[in-house]
Each structure stands twice: as structure tokens, then as C-alpha cells.
Image 1 (cartoon, one colour):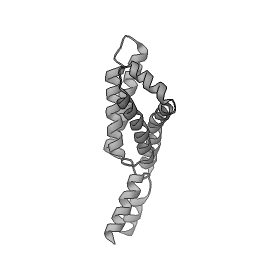
Image 2 (cartoon, one colour):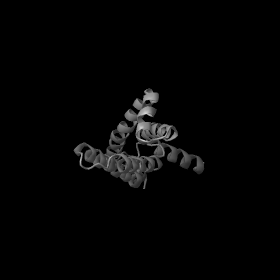
Image 3 (cartoon, helix red, strand yellow):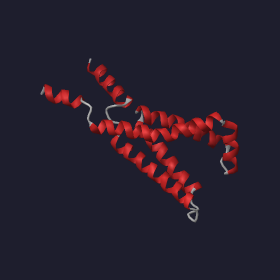
Length: 145
């Protein structure tokens, strides 16, 4: 019985794969969010030209940074993945539908592929190498005492 409990806490290749997958997915959102935030006025102007109001543009930047950090650290992973999945689907449908342009088609497909990665995180969760797991173990330990 002790062996089963010990082996249940070991990290396996799935957890390592989820960690690296989370890092790669979060990189895109963190880089873009930080870039937009560092040039905030220009970002608002550019988004306004696309018909995006300033409050929505600001929320987009916050979502990209907060969601990217949540995915990277594995904190509230499923919720963050759901938000970023919806964000990518909406981005694809609202801004990348000119399929006559190969570049637009590529962006459309990229956004849908990222959404697929987020759906995988929603189903699989963050894995053991995450803040979600640390918090869950903390609560279990405190409830047991």
C-alpha cells in the first residue's frame, strides 16, 4: 500500500509533457500581451482601426497576460484555458476570415490550432507540475489535520 501512495506522487512523462506544452502555449500570449502593454497607446489606436473599443482592447491585454501567466504556472489552468480558447476562436472568426489571402487563412488555422491546445488543457488539466496541484495538496493536508 505504501508503494502505491509513493508512486502516485511521482512525476511522470505526462506531467513533463503538460508542463512544456503549457510553457509553449503561454509564451505566445505573454509575449503579445507584454508587447501590447508596453506600447499601450499604439495598441489602442491599432485596435480602434479594427473596430475594437478601448475597454475591449484593455481586457484583451489583461486576458493575454493573466491567462498566459495562469497557463504557465498551472494556476486555475482549466479556467484560463477556457478563456484563451474562446479568445482564439473569436479572434479567428472576427479578424481572419479573408481566406483569399493565404496569410489570413494561416492565422485562422493557427488560432484554431491554439484553441485545440487549450481544449486539451481543459480536459487534461495542468498536471502535477503546477500550482493547481500544490494548492490541492495543501488543502487536502489541512483538511486531514
